[in-house]
Amino acid sequence: MARRRKQPWQLQEAKAKFSEVFDLATKGEPQIVTRHGKDAVVVVSRDQYNALRGGRDPFISFLLGGPKVPGGIPISREYAPYKPPVDFSDPEFRSDDKGAGTDK
Figure 1 (tube, rainbow, N blue to C red):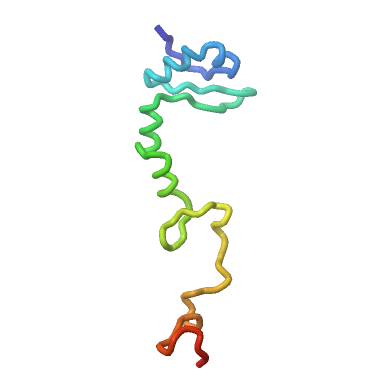
Figure 2 (figure 1 turned 45 degrees about the horizontal axis):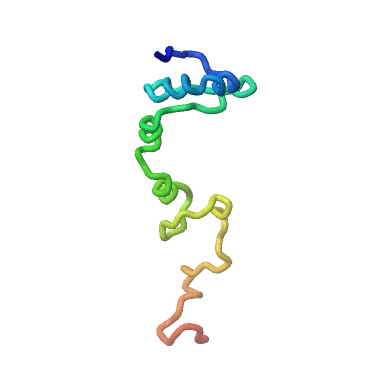
């Protein structure tokens, strides 16, 4: 039977005793693993992971998260500050009743 562990695992020990880390995590006890003395990862059961993520599928989480363009499509944070060179909501760029592209 796996013991209850309160202190974090050092990476080398977690590797050597992964079955124990696994057993404790699947029993609902998240296991912290450190690297170079700093917390690096937490091993949790799939049920706990799903609860933390709100039970969402990763693709759905992607679609629901992050910055979006006006139509609701997610865009990369890399391009989030991008502004188009033309403001199509400006009345000067709208077509008039005579047709698009005619001079006034």
